[in-house]
Length: 324
Image 1 (cartoon, helix red, strand yellow):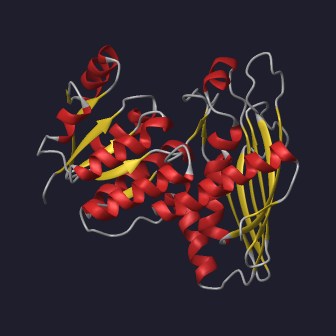
Image 2: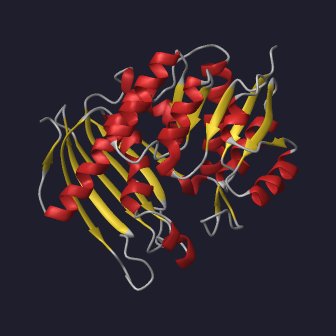
């Protein structure tokens, strides 16, 4: 088995989960990383047991690297994805995959011209429970899909909330691509947002979107950094798909460990496992076998249009028609 060499562009918190996935995966090796802060790059390289590069150009010139993980801030995803594609490297890019739809379209052209694969980190859809739900929908076991719900209520500490984007970009992005995967294409978007205690940060920390789908079904997406849900059967992070012949559910609360993990006060094990599943699928199926990702850059473009429609709807107080 050929060893698939991986390089990291960026070494923030999410790199820990991706590195762990690579370390546990037979036939994969993290060759090295670059980070804009050299001290952090050195520290993470020691932690991961890999080398560092002085520049992105140096990393992309390494023939031992077959694919790169773009793990930097959203504003640089387009630039680094295009550079990696032009260097002949396959790309896994963290979400949101870019700042706007135009950048995603530029990335798509670069990837197609280079003949490489680019897989957005749409991690929920690589979870076994979501794969089973997708199979049930495709096989018609749920009948016609009538309703889709995705709810998220996880309190984030003030310092984390202040440096994150608002929940529309940070969380409804997840909701949108999961909805696309399970419920189909959107037609009309209506969104509301709120900032609880804007002295901490001006960006919204609660948002809700109602979406009419092209097939006539309805979706509701909700996200909050302002609170946890402490009630029975809490809506910590929950997905429901309801059809005419059946329904299915996915919940973070099914696997919980009582210690902090990143921004979360508890470890909702589905989250780190979904990141590892994503990295594993990318290396074993996309890079090694040449299969297509479960979610493409075209899906990322549609997802970005949903997010931009949510922002416009919330700002203007209007329904936004995505069919135009």
